[in-house]
Image (tube, rainbow, N blue to C red; front, side, top):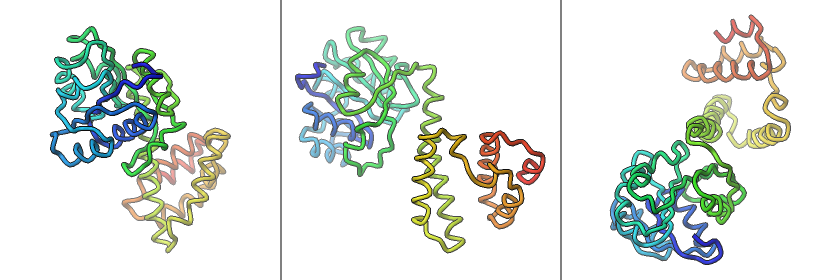
Length: 274
């Protein structure tokens, strides 16, 4: 794909990540030629196609539509989509999937059947809720694999690409899940514990933002404060006395992680967490 001359792309999988990338590409001057989903008449397919000013079609037809095909389906469907595309892709096409957990291995059906096409992986390291503007990608990092064209594609939509080997993908994706999904789950616990004290979640927003700022400015170990960091076992025990049984496991697990981060291994702390 020539970076300066728009040549068009097709999107297979009109979900959150695919729509965000597609919208950013269109904003950068790269026209969308087709959108394929579970079916050409599925509401998600037709709605995304309309938003991108293009047509809804089948997966096989999407392969004929443009020299760049973006696969943004659930991970379990990538290989099936790749196999469907194999017979219809334009010679020299670039096929890129957006999975974080998989690398080029997910495109094996194309690697074995279409030596004349390029294969890549591009995972935006950003949370996408579906209601975001494509500008949320600007400045975010992205894990890439494949030819230099994939790196140029990432730059084109405002991402900061870094290469990652297929073997490192599971560990990388696990870190991404903890950083986003587990953080959200943790804040869900904050909301529940705070509600028991009659305090709204919004009251914790400045604390959360400042904590994150300190983590990225100082590093996690230096940013850690609180009872575990200072060895205040009595306070930890008082927390456990009032936390509901179904909330206690998460608290003790994270207090244990805080102790490891702080380099504390006192018997008293181990005892109260046990």
